[in-house]
Image (cartoon, rainbow, N blue to C red; front, side, top):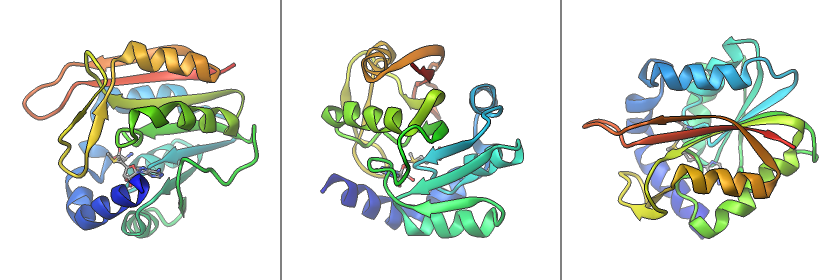
Length: 200
Ligand SMILES: C[S@@+](CC[C@H](N)C(=O)[O-])C[C@H]1O[C@@H](n2cnc3c(N)ncnc32)[C@H](O)[C@@H]1O
């Protein structure tokens, strides 16, 4: 199963991943500003799905957001709980959220859908839409590309997406785009595309 493969792959590099990417100082300031702009003033629960080490969940919590981080990898959840003892973290899959429909005010999925086979993205967006309140906000970060395709990600196979294709799929799943952020790649980072969308 694809989820097991992703979980095992991140488990085997969890310590290194935490060291390289596990604090907000390692996140681009534009990305933090984008996340803050769309999720900081949500009135209720915001889920950070595929939260990894939990640094972005901690960031949202520090902004006064009622944030919960969810991830497949026990090592990430243990680290997140230890470094952010006041924040809620749960072990689980973002593909089957343990929440009532229409009960979540915001979702952050920051590079967490990148390992999902392309044919499964629509199902994931449908699950996000089910969980969100009307007018709930989704912030989705992916790797940007001219066409959909797999690439050799350091942890486990990942997929990149044209941002317009993501926007179309979001519209079909019941979202309206409100802002997008694109950053070209450089010698350290692959091109990024992020979309903020509201549930309609
Ligand atoms: C590239 S990392 C991003 C982590 C974090 N969002 C960040 O920005 O550093 C992808 C994360 O998504 C998690 N993930 C992948 N598929 C998942 C799923 N179905 N449910 C929950 N977490 C998942 C992985 O365990 C990993 O922590």
